[in-house]
Image 1 (cartoon, rainbow, N blue to C red):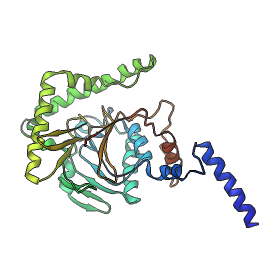
Image 2: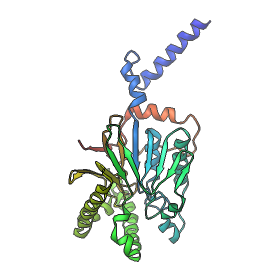
Image 3: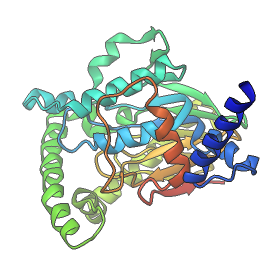
Image 4: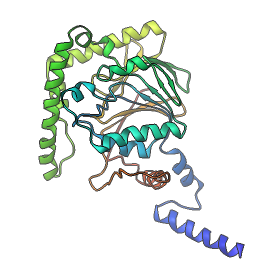
Length: 315
């Protein structure tokens, strides 16, 4: 009886993996299922939950397909500035919080570094189970490099010294984000991909480009006081990996325009993944069960497309 059951199980298993495109005779295919979307560390910043510009569905799609030992939330998780002007909190934003907490329950170490839009959390530094709230952190990569992790608003002179101007700028930015929706609605009609008007304006305005350059240089100078080989930050919504004055500069971007994340593999290599958007026909389920991640992992290992996500690395 047991032999019959074993043969039946083998046939069913073979049919399942053949359906998903894996060769049951090739062990390498099964290694891919376990390791393809597993990373040592991830850094995400500037989610701006509580705003209409937050791409919560894209973030949920990413969190379902990727696992990491340590997750850094590098500021502006929740946008208190915008919530003070008006309450906007759809179910998907609650799902993001639940998904992050669930990763913590499953063993992921979560380090939350508040930014300027969620600065109220700064009054709660300390450890809460598997979640730690810190002002800044020093991360050691697998290849023993020291990285300063900081949101970055500390080096923004406007945020620190002229807060009313920072709020005015934020209102203008929110207007541009609202214009993104009708622009992309028209683009989808003509079969074009996602495009951010706000990001285009930011990159085109000379003063904005100058500010970004000055910000990056200031962050690198600040990091030298900590004897580190690199600095990881967010704040300016400009994802990039580059070297400045022999110091690695890593900006994790945001989940409003670029939908980006920094990922460290188990060899210490840090990559930048941008433009993470689920396919048009993908359905991000809101209600979750304890076993929901298994089919999502198999599907992620099968396609690994992340809607044509783009990557960047630094040597």
